[in-house]
Image (cartoon, rainbow, N blue to C red; front, side, top):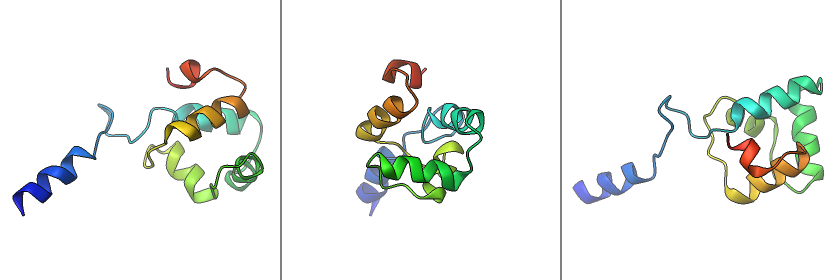
Amino acid sequence: QQCHAERDEMYKIKTDDGLCNIIGKKLKEYRLRKNMSLRDMASVLQSEGLDWDKNAVDRTEKGQRAVIDIEIVKLAQIMKMSCDELLK
């Protein structure tokens, strides 16, 4: 039981602010700048091959959802910025 608890903690990497990602703020800024709803943004992401619904967009923006590398690359392309810019 002890080992299992320690292993689970290993996967809960968060920012100093307790967020699960560092791109959420930029994603929200982009969406609002483009006057898109959460649903609109999800549709754009889906059309580009990401399996995101409006809840995934919302949770990502709030830092409640981790984002994998493939998603970061695709988001950067959609937002017309480099991955480095997105991750700053």
